Amino acid sequence: MKIPFTKMHGLGNNYIYIDGFETKINEELLPQLSQAVSDVNTGIGSDGLILMLPSTNADVRMRIFNKDGSEAMNCGNGLRCVAKLAYDSGYVPKEQFQIEAKSGVVEAEVVVIDGIVEQVTIDMGEPILQREQIPMVTANYTNETVINEKFPVGDQDLFATAVSMGNPHVIFYVEDINDAPIDTVGPEVTSDARFPEGVNVEFVEVLNDHEINFRVWERGSGITQACGTGACASVVASVLNNYVKRGESVTVHLDGGDLTITWEENGHVMMKGPAVNVAEGIYFLKT
Ligand SMILES: N[C@H](CCC[C@H](N)C(=O)O)C(=O)O
Image (cartoon, rainbow, N blue to C red; front, side):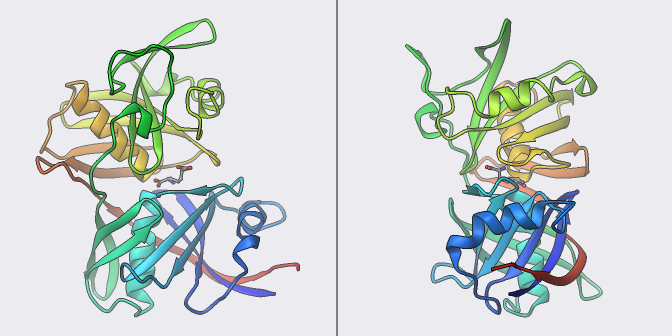
């Protein structure tokens, strides 16, 4: 089966995008298709697979699968690229529209310069802070939320802040992002039993009250160049820990570049950043 695709990235967080309006794929094949296309040796090479699909609740729908084939509830970089793809494809001939993710419907706005979508703003909605909804399970806890809570990992006492953007994130603060134990703590915590659905693991260095450095070990994909939902969760966590201010924009420096995130006074988290086309092609699915 020949499958047309577009490879796109948001700050280096790259996915294989399939236009589900044109190409119909048996959805039972999607997890293994994500694994196959993500493989840099035998596939195309990516952090996973994203489908742009018709929606009855919004202008378009996004489904996102990680490199390991697991389906995720949300993807910030993916939403920006789906917005670009939907606008460029002509399916959504307007600059403000809605996208349905598994976690819910978000508002998107594309910034078009000389006919090209360069930047996209997504209203990511409200973060989820109640530990049982993250979900995070811990014995005899006292607070409903998880803010700078002792979180033993091996023989280390780390301190965790947990936030969901529809998908689960745990944030650890470090003195220097270059020393973040991403290769050890990342894989260990992402499948920790205290997170029954797994978790995206973020490390944050606070530079000042409007700038943070950020690295991520993503659930289902490992280290990526950027994580949009993770950047949103990290700004929320930084407000909760009094490092940055509610209602003020924060520049998040990720491996792949910068995102501008604001946790607005109305409770919504706004994310602004680029979406880039890399290539178009045909993938030969062996069935
Ligand atoms: N690995 C994530 C999904 C991708 C999120 C990330 N790429 C983003 O831009 O938000 C999860 O399993 O929840």
